[in-house]
Length: 332
Image 1 (cartoon, rainbow, N blue to C red):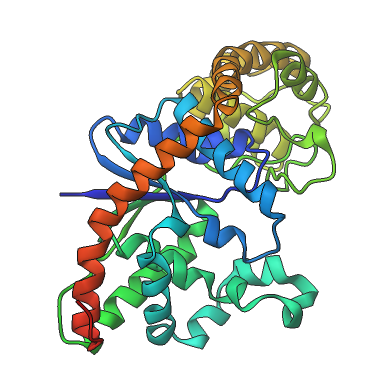
Image 2 (spheres, rainbow, N blue to C red):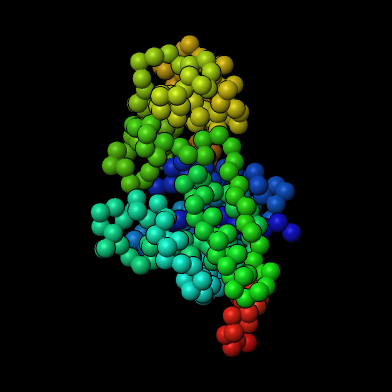
């Protein structure tokens, strides 16, 4: 059986990039796949988090997934720290993975920046934890953004080395799933930078709790260039803001970028933005309303996580026992 594993960090202020790059695709995947959706709170603490904020952000992610259409009864939604196998397997993978492999991870270099020596060990080693997240359930496919492909390649390397070290065909070789248009949504203020909650400008992103007025305001103020919209995808080269906004339209309307270019080519940005606003409000406003309702009932969100964690642990525990036996660790 194919198992789809997906993780998302509870970092707060979920935005359009999170929705289009991950959550919306998960909703489609669940129709014919068995999916495990994990709120990766252990990954979140690789940089310092205020405890109360971390708890709240974890609930927000769950609310966003359910409001977007993920069925918590049929699929598994849980938070990572409740299933001890994630941390246990991550340590084993710390002993399988090589420092040279981790040194090549470009995302660590980007996040640590000039303060590399002051970054946490967790931030450096978290790709090993990501590998543990996936392989603990023997996941075969993982929906990833383009910026996570390198980490998935590391997961494959770890699986192969583990299998080779112990002379056993135990872990599957995981395949990436990169789905749909706008898998990498860029800032509304700078088409060269990824949409991010850390951007100081609130106008850089549409969040999943923005009401229709805020969505409208942010899209109207989105950066553009002075030229009309292009008629074909090739003409988007060198026009990052046009590329970003048209890709967002394609993703929200579940169509191809080529078709968006054909429809709006030659029109001014002002006309296109009005169409994009109407589309974004139609798609996102029902999600925003449902998120607000769910967040007003934190006990129900905690119940969903509790049930999901029990179901996840029922899958993870026997796998972890097998792994301990393979490695030579005395266990139950």
